[in-house]
Amino acid sequence: MNRFEVESIAETILGMAGSKCGVLGADVMYFFAESHSLSLLDGAPEENSYGVSGGIAVRVIGRDGRQGVAYGNDFSRSSICDMVEWSHANCLASEPDEGVSLYDGPVPGDERSLQLYDESIARGVPSEFRMRTCMEMTAIARERDGRVVSVRSAAWSDSVAESFYASTAGARGWKRGTAASCGVTVVLMDGESYEMGAYGHGARYMEDLDGVEYARRSVDRTLQVLGGKPLPTGKYTLLLDPEVSASMIDEIGDMFCASEIHKGRSLMAGRLGETVAGSCVTLVDDARLPRRMGTSSFDGEGVPTGRTVLIDSGAASAYLYNLQHAAKDGVRSTGNAARSLASLPDVGVSNLTLAPGSESRESLIRGVGRGFLVTELMGLHTINPVSGDFSLGAKGVVIDNGVAGAPVAGVTIAGNLIEFLKKITSVGSDLEFFGSTGAPTIVAEGITVAGD
Image (cartoon, rainbow, N blue to C red; front, side):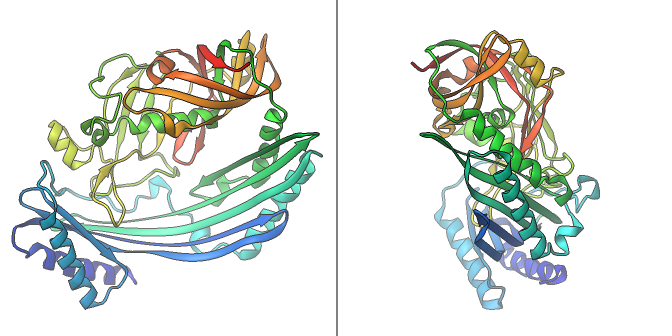
């Protein structure tokens, strides 16, 4: 459907929903996406798919804060009527809640300065290009080292999407974006040692991807830990590789969402102004970084997005909010409402960035006497968000007197997240984004590693 048709249907839905008895207001979300993907297994096609997804949803808000959602992908008159009836019924069946409202300010439209739309993707990526890229990544990975026994996956995907938001409070806004990704998974063997590893990236613009480099790095990173042995149990200086740092930052970012704070599911509750990390740690949520995967002009409630400093030089400084939780705390929404067609607005992160320092990764390694460069952490989802306690499997490389050496595997890092954050003494200059999270190398002193 074109934009005029979508807007007309949205107005019809809002009119019907807003006229229901006991309704404070309503909003509508429309989403449509088209995607292609290709993956090769040892050079042979494994998956080659095309798909479309999307639909339209209506949320009805009662005067007592009850909410109900219904959605579908049938735009016929009868289906729309049913959708409104279901959302109203769901609203009546829900519990009253505080702070639920609609945004009544201006909604920013597509902003070219955010650079979210690559015309070369939108026009259609040729199937020959996808195949050529995957074949090239396969060849590069195979040639990189003789211990590569399988290129388990060489994959490419691209997509284009657009969405529309409208409410009975007068908010109206369109946004659109593109995305592409590619990466390689390899299997290496050396005698009886076996290791599988992967590397890849996603981006808004095709020109920001480098499949050849990703193929090389997938092999090199896997080689680093091939044949790894446990370290002696003891205290080490830990260096977290940027990808590992980013995965940990992901877990920390969720703890600053006001919805988690209100539900008692975050160790950051009540810690604003308190030192929660080393002074070199500054963590920012910024939905307005050009070309980034988490960038958006407005959130799931039509509120303009922005930049929020969560940790400022080691001190917890702010939480992330949608309209409801902002009203409960007597503050303004930070533009972090997150929702799908089937869900009510919650709070989510956008682009999380651990601010880089000035020292290179190589310099950080040279400064370590007895250390462990961590290239993979396993079990991050098991971190207790309330207590911060964790026990994580790890792989990487031992560091001895400033030199990276033998591969490490079969070790465990256990402790408390706040204590770990406070032991971070340096942050590297090698900032790298993985999805919507950016982080450099992190150095943490005196961390217990359990091995032999």
